[in-house]
Image (cartoon, rainbow, N blue to C red; front, side, top):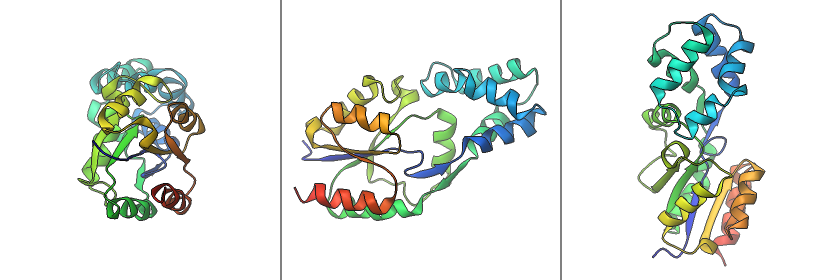
Length: 203
């Protein structure tokens, strides 16, 4: 059993992203307005259903084609919504701190299959075999801050919930983790996360 475990959020922690880029790219691809794309993908429940694994990638693309009344390949649609990420290289500092302390790491993310596979194909330096469990909402059919995804994390961590540390950019996700007894850091910068982790490791 591990003595401690640390989970990192994906978006806006390990990587930067901007959904507006997806809206603009998909609008250009489908020849529809950004307002139409925003409504169909993000203002509806479509993106949430995709990130919860309630629809597959093919079904997601088919629904976009149907709602926007266009005929675009699933590959092009999934590329348009996924080519929105950039690596957060500053996060390497707290990762290296934890690796040097031999603390096991995992990823806890609300994400969809297309986003995850696109990011993994980039082979950015913050991703490697030091990450063990990768608890992804579309695979466990539960999204933060719902309890189910946190329960999945606890099953994989191999330590008491009081020994889990979690960083996320959204306060509601941090609050849900704290209610379970996890130590947390509301992510604002890699520097502040490193400072918080040093204090946690020194306990």
